[in-house]
Amino acid sequence: MVHAFMYHGGFDTNFSALAPGATTFRGSDGSERVIPDWPAEVDGIRVGYMERPGKRFVAVRVMDDDDDVVLEHEVPIDLARHMGYGKRFSPEPTLVDDDALARTFLRDVISANATQEVELLAIASRLPRSR
Image (cartoon, rainbow, N blue to C red; front, side, top):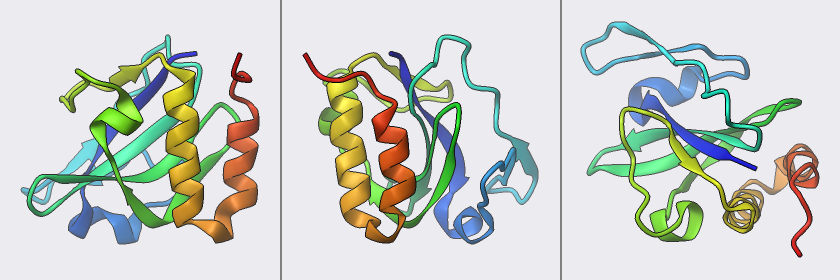
């Protein structure tokens, strides 16, 4: 499967208004920005992330074809642990084709968002089983 991480704006400006189905966010200049469509090859989890002060990036939303979960508690993104070595954030979605990394990411998200465990486990259950 191919998973992806996509920018959803600055945390302080946008997190409180984030809701499932969101298609826009506020830019640092106050203008409304459109969240682009996910690349066609993404058939796994889709992660919306925001930027905290100091260039710290946090996951705030986890989606797949069936569910769209806005996290109660943001989760710091560890590039190597969650995306793989050599992956970086960019204006384009960052693609990850490693299901083990996706499972690790979801375990970390569930650990930080225990009250949303049922919804997040539903997303995890649709990932391929490890071999």
